[in-house]
Every structure is written in structure tokens, then in C-alpha cells.
Image 1 (cartoon, rainbow, N blue to C red):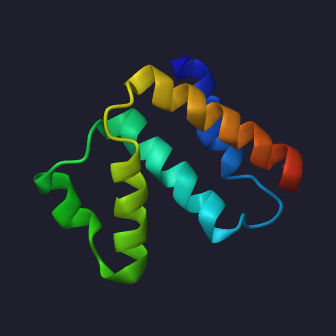
Image 2 (image 1 turned 120 degrees about the vertical axis):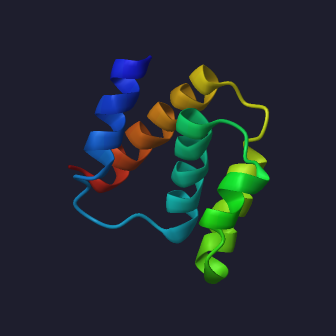
Length: 88
């Protein structure tokens, strides 16, 4: 799963068009859950910067309790969806 996750994170950066904000927030929440685990006070203080930061943090909080592997798998699925929609 790790290799597929790494490939998906690289491929998402190559999208031909910028995904919608909601799509980006979902991707962010899954990414943070996969690489950092459950949100905590320590990592939310760094993340909370303005409304955009708050929205990203809230998306991460929605993923709380999701295992690293499940978060990676969900990220991979979302990345594939965005690649199909926007192309690379």
C-alpha cells in the first residue's frame, strides 16, 4: 500500500487542472491521517492558520480513528478519481 500511496501523492501533483476546494480538502484530510495519524493539540496548532487552515484541520478531524493503511487506501482511491477527472 505504501508504494501505491507514494505514487498517488506524486501523481496528484501532476494534475492538468486544479481540483475543487472540497476535493483538495478531502485529499488533505486523508493524507494527514495517513502520514501523521489522529489529529492532536500539538499538530492542530500548527495547522490552524486562517479559514483555509481551519477547513483543512476540520477535514483531518473527520478522519480520526482511521488506520494508516485505510487512510492510504482511501487517498489512493480519491487520487485515482481525480486523475481520471482532471488528467495528468
